[in-house]
Length: 89
Image (cartoon, rainbow, N blue to C red; front, side, top):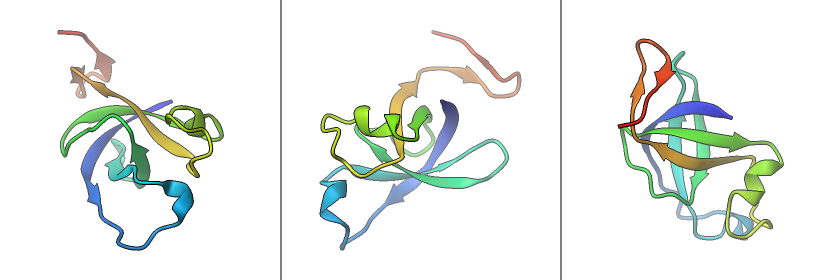
């Protein structure tokens, strides 16, 4: 798993049926690398999230037949990005 920040929503008018109707999010790591993930959690721009990658990402969706290798697993309530430590509020 990895911690990433939501940059934006990705809108695609044409997409493979295997992606179903899940929202797509553009995510950025602390180094600036961008990735796209399916988001069953409803995250918004600016949220820090943890993602599940690889074949396990399919099982983080309600339907394991979804074609994904990166899925938002949850929205982080608080993360001190300067110290790289996760804290709860």
